[in-house]
Image 1: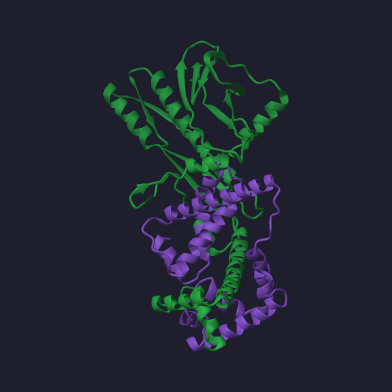
Image 2 (image 1 turned 135 degrees about the vertical axis):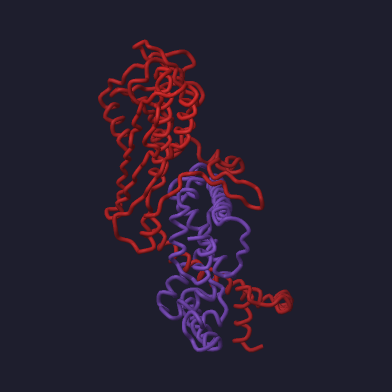
Length: 307
Length: 179
């Protein structure tokens, strides 16, 4: 075999371009010649080097891409959507209970539009949420029609996220970013088995626990379940245990917001209601809601809420 | 873009399909690493590695996909992250034991090859990456690079590889790695 032929054979062997028969014959030669085996090892290192060179080029290409939103922002958007949806549903529910039996509630704006403008020009994503509040119209109808109308309207309330890019970037980038992004979670399948994209997987937990102790999670979508216990009393109270929060008092006058602070190691919850912020600590007993008065904390919370 | 259209773009070597996939699944894939104690940097790195593995498989025609691209990508990401956690665990163990961590021959060679490839320039860079990374046949490279036929590419690749070997051997020989 000429040296050129041998090199070509090695290249074909390393790039899986040999037929099964040639491959077996070549492997037989390798087992008989330690020099050839060593040469192949060296050539394999060079081939890996070429692959890594190309990988490096592709990686730097990906690093230069401007993403619509960062990881933190994405989660924050999800949290905001969850909060907004919750607010809309709670408002709807409260309105239902506060109306007299003769009145019918019709939700006019069935779509809550959340517009997200991603300003890629200065790399800072500028996100603004515009929530169209639902208007209420009252009309006379029978009791059973009222209930079915409310149920249908609430079910039809949809949340849309539209993402716009100001300019710059290729045409295809624009097309991608200007298209509407579905918020629904799709669980893809592989060989018929469903897979969750959100849950941590146990096998990884075993490896990582001892390595990563005390590291704060970047963020997560809150699983918090909020319940309102209506009371006409002016005093506001709450119970917060597990992932359940019960707000006790008159929360019908205006919408409230739950703010989750994940920027610190231990997650903290705050309630924003009628221009006041309240810190929520875990309690299985009814506890009075006391407004935050610490100016530094208030500044921080205002900032957090605006984000 | 449908999944089939994405795969068609990849098979043509259209790198904008890589950009599209990267943006499309970025939140989903990085979230998996973050939820499993990874940092943002690690999440980016793992996702990029996984996407390149997917790209390489798809472009070389090795990909037999029976599920959604997202599912397939997710499983590659998961494997990459497990591999990285294992590597970190081994490294942490080695540090505790006070052992000396030796340089990886692959890392040394990658550095040397990178420098050599920059010296080679095009068309050698393209011919060699099409052959070794994309695992394209001579006739496929001929089509892509507008060479008259497969034999011309074969001769070109041979010359380019020889030039690369010369540049590498200026710094390291086979014996440096194995003796």
